[in-house]
Structure formats: C-alpha cells, structure tokens
Length: 263
Image 1 (cartoon, rainbow, N blue to C red):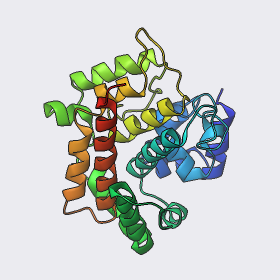
Image 2 (image 1 turned 60 degrees about the vertical axis):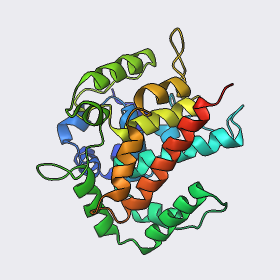
Image 3 (image 1 turned 180 degrees about the horizontal axis):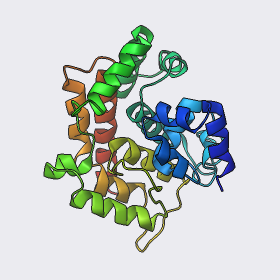
C-alpha cells in the first residue's frame, strides 16, 4: 500500500506514467514505490508542488526552514544552500522555481555574489533551454558532459568503493534505496539532500560514533564535490548552471574551512 504523500504526488502529476516522465525514470520504477525515496523527494516536490513535509514527513519536519527548534540562522542558511543545490541538480527548474531564484539576494561577499549571478541567470533563462542544458550536462544520450558521482571522481569508474562506503553509512542512518530505483546514491544531488536533512535534524544521527553533518561531509563530499562544482563552473556547455557551479564550489570551500576550525 502506497503512503499518502506518494498518492498525492501521483494524483498531482496526472498518474504514475506522468510522474515517471517528469522525473526521468521508468514507469515500472515509480509503480514499485511504496513511498517517495529519500533521493527523489525534492524532485517530486518540484514536479508536483506537493511539499516535502507531506511527501516524507519522517524526513522533513513541518516547521518552516530556519524555524526548527535549536536551528540557528547559520545552520538554516547552510541547510537551505544544500537543499537548493540538490533541487537544481536533480532536475531542471520549472518556471516558478526560476521566478523565485530571480529575486536578487541580500548580502555581501563571494557567496552573495554567486547567488546574485544565479538570480541574473534565472531572470534571463528560457525554460526549454534550461531543460536541454540540464539533460546535456547530467543525463545525455550516450553520456553526459559531467558525471556527478563520487565513485567516478574518486576512481574513474562508477559503482566503486566510494558508493559501497556511502551505502554503509546510509544504512546506519536508516536510509535505503527504493526498489526499482537504479540511480547510484553517490550522485552529488542526493548527497546535498542528505546534508540538508542532517543539518535540520530531519535525519536522526545514528551509530557509534554517530554520523552527523560533519562526518558525512568529510567522508562523502569533501574528497571530491569541490572538483565537480569547479568543473561545472568551467563547463562550456553550462550557461544557467555555471553560477550553480560557482555557488556549489563556494559552499564546499566554506564548509571545509568551517569544519577544519578547532572546536
């Protein structure tokens, strides 16, 4: 029996086949789901408008971003940055997302400048062109421009030891890939989504010692994600996604520097 959140998403999309088409996965894969897989929550939210808090209330608290008990302003901003990266990397933004991104940010510094560049790109973006760009960069026919997987960046091949190590940690966190989902979990979009969940305490830290956001970042993002975002930033095929690359690179650099500071 499917969970209510998934039923609502299927109804909003116009059926299982329509939802699968929006997500770029097969219809049988979606048919096998009992609930929305953790690595598909943000994509389903973007495709259907059903909020993540209804899709997976076990992973996302109902309180607004930044309003969770004990979540300070810096942590809220970190979680929002990771969630934004995850959303944009999973699938091309729809028009409403582009409209929200086009609002100029407030603030100064490199991160604010990167967000301002993204706002400019969103304001000028053509929806169809952004969809084609996302497909060519991350999916492709016979191969994409970039390979957004930890295993590829660290070993040169897919489905290697980094993926196995990630799966072990995901198991300790109580996260498992749904049946019928073939996308490897070491996709950078999914890793950013997990980071957002850990920062918001939406994913309970477990294990001895526990896997918190610092541990997860050090193991699964710090060794390679900065290089991926730098490649995206420099990719000739990237136009709308070039400032996404800059934003992601800066987030990785800031996080690495912050975690390296003595407590």
